[in-house]
Image: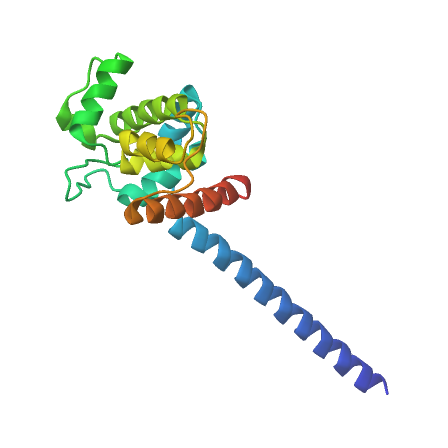
Length: 191
């Protein structure tokens, strides 16, 4: 009887150990997935600049991921440049409006300059529009278009969030950023 009890005990310990290893593998795998799927290569820069403009670092990371896959040399078909995919004309306007005197178009591929300009622009959009979804739509689809959509809906620009994003590309963009934002929030709070 004692041999059977010892054998059952060993079997139970082996099963418990196997379950513990399986749980650990799942946990490490999930953490690895977040690290790979939601990278933060410019976390220090973002955490310094974003709060200066009333922005959450998680949101800035999400926009960067969707815009450029965190590639500072990225250039879109339309000519948007850098991590946050700023159009050179917009970047120049933001630099002038924000008093950034050391701006030059060739600096748009520099992570710190690109993030700083984008954060200034996002702050401007938040001051113009009322909520994150509308700000994201304006960042991607243009603030003039968003203002027009709000007026078409009978709302007041700056006080009414956009309900109907007319551009399919912008609707898709907003949903991707919102998803990435939620995942970055999880990653920031569970790292």
